[in-house]
Length: 460
Ligand code: AMP
Image (cartoon, rainbow, N blue to C red; front, side, top):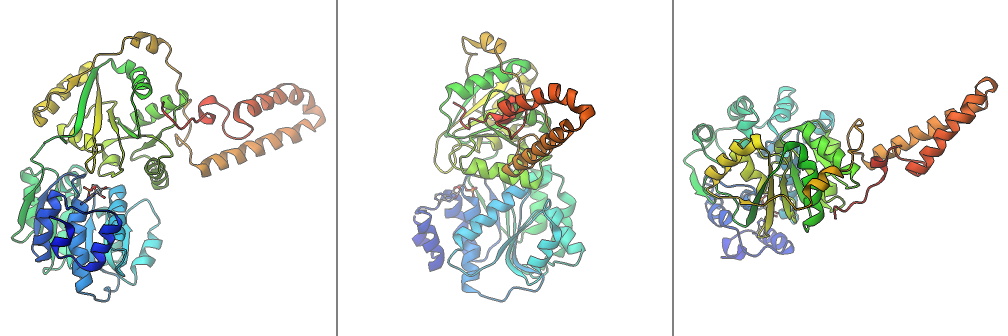
């Protein structure tokens, strides 16, 4: 079967051919025909299966065939996503697949000024991709309504539940109009998700492309037993030895992610962190740099990385393995996307062995145990020191510029102090020496410590 056989409108086929998509993935083959008929759908599918196009293409087809003005302060289609990153990614897919249709696509999520969103939404939008919290904020402020929604999509339902969105979702369900098409996607379908699906769906067609807890087949899965305190040394070696195009490094906590980035910086290896304590700007910058290949390593927590679709992720490194088996499946699903192959390497400390067991039980896959490298103890002894902690962890070019500016102003101040007779003696001695060190270390601009200045950009 090819996309041409599905009966999609011409502008959509044109966009697909521009993206060089020829064959629909299994979820697309199953979902698109029933969605084109206008049926509700309950899909069990993980990210990486092509589920975004599975719901975007038939919806775009509907809009192509049923043009209508957008409802004032409302939308014709609402897609709910658990995270901002996934929302941005879904919106981009709609823009790509709908590039030959005149449709408006907007994202609605927290962390960006609400007033701008209010302005953009005031005339109405065809497709809104939103996270539940900000959507309800806008509705509560009477800046937006979902009462005209013709197609409703709830994506990553299990993640929504994990993130505690159950009450917002129940509220949203009550605000939607009765007459609409519903699509519901979840990677897993335990009882409580099924109950949630029941609140939205009307006689749905059920499609499933990956049985519960099945690990992506093309991922080579390895594990190494290592003390928690020695994981940085192991990471250093793995990054040196492996042929890495792009790697996602997972930690369980936000601080853990920052610690890994500081360690890598200290070793002269460029990396960004992405987690819930980062501002939206930092998260976007990090993801963009990773996507564009400007940085090869992204250190992430589970929530922030969920749904991230970056092609060419050759490695997933579980610096800390997750205590929930499902998270492991989601993590390793970041590699081996769209037919590629990938490697997942897990660092397992003693207290994480029970987690490994439950992962192996849930996925029914035994991980390949790789022993510590021969030179490991030497590597531990020679471990580079982490870069000192500083506010905001890594810096964007704008932050670097700001820092350089501050540095310049400080130096100017020092110079003017030197001009004052009673301070001249001290300033010419201590201060002058300090300034000299600063110029040598940081090229006169960024940071005074080694880690902040030296960015190699390549992990090998
Ligand atoms: P998703 O599961 O929606 O996150 O999609 C995973 C990746 O597969 C994305 O990078 C899509 O752009 C890509 N993709 C989706 N459908 C197809 C297709 N039919 N052929 C090739 N790539 C696809």
